[in-house]
Length: 184
Image (cartoon, rainbow, N blue to C red; front, side, top):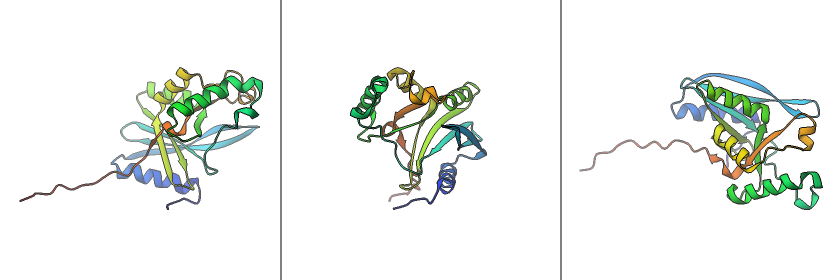
């Protein structure tokens, strides 16, 4: 089983997978994202010459699974029900959520208005999983099912998370290469 030692290795591998698909990279950048309690993390963003943007969230600790509903405070019950509903309907058996900060999502939507096609990519280095989705489709799912917290612990600390079911994201597959053959 393939795995990566860290996020840097995993992002490099993803960059190579993009190039294997014929997407030429124009630039890479680090984006600072608020992680709560005064901490920031650097997330990767890859731009291609054909105007795709891949915003990468690397999860070296693995999947984030919402806590059991019996442990949720009364303030968070409604959001917990929405999370569990979304996971049950769209999660494809995966009980986890993926996401990013609201300000990062808005930044990606603004890039789309500017002519780019932004994608969210979640990487799990330990299992070498690359999952992706179109940023606008993720935003529509979040807004349609109300999983953007209006009142939450995160929101009270200035960090609102946009969460989608991890199982809803598409698995990145290596391109299939099949050269034509002539049969007699």
